[in-house]
Image (cartoon, rainbow, N blue to C red; front, side, top):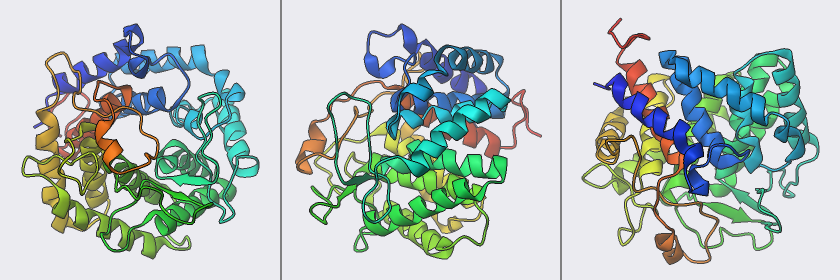
Length: 350
């Protein structure tokens, strides 16, 4: 059973991240790190009606909304998912503005997939497709398509989902590579990075929920998703955790990926996209994550921001520290468990 108090303490740690000296815990920015944290906070508001979460989100949007018009990258699109949840005319106009930039102006590979772009000055990953893009951009496009009924947004989400499954999938193992390079026509270091796979699982499940059931490639994507989850069962440690690179036990167990995999698999089984034969994957992952939440709500054993590294071995050198996306992904997992247990807003069984 998920204790509401546990969700509240993880939530509080995320909200109070703006007081942190660590940039990767600073929620008062407009980028992917705060964006994932905000998405977790939004889920607490949606599922638990926790007043502090709603108050915080309204205030955050008021402070930062104009930055959505100033920043034009894949990573800076992540907070827009949460802005879309507040359905005033101004919010919808803002989200459409960002979505139209993505559809009509964002850099792309020749195959039509979005190039992964970031906010850091002078940093460019020309011609690279990353698993991360599905979460940072495509969930928002699918949500906007469903909210407005405009097929161009839903269609772009479906297109990107299909392309990312096509170009990033490792057909031998069943899981996904971190990225693909158009220039070299390969997967660079060919890392089967755990958090990258988690981005794919979560995004695929959420986008499938939002798109019309007849979109092109749907059955192929569902097959690919189940192949991935089947492979998770092979890579999962006895304690339920996943290594930061799935097939490299010389690395360290990583909490944000494990939490997101637990969330995505649980939600996917509930919605009928993932076979119930894989129930044990999310249950074991939950147990591993629960052991990595400190008493003050800090999620530990989370890897720092990770570009496509030059070698697989270099993924094991990424710093481990508390992060907002660690908090956010654990909140997604905890809230989905809370909902699966049939709890109402007051924490009582319905």
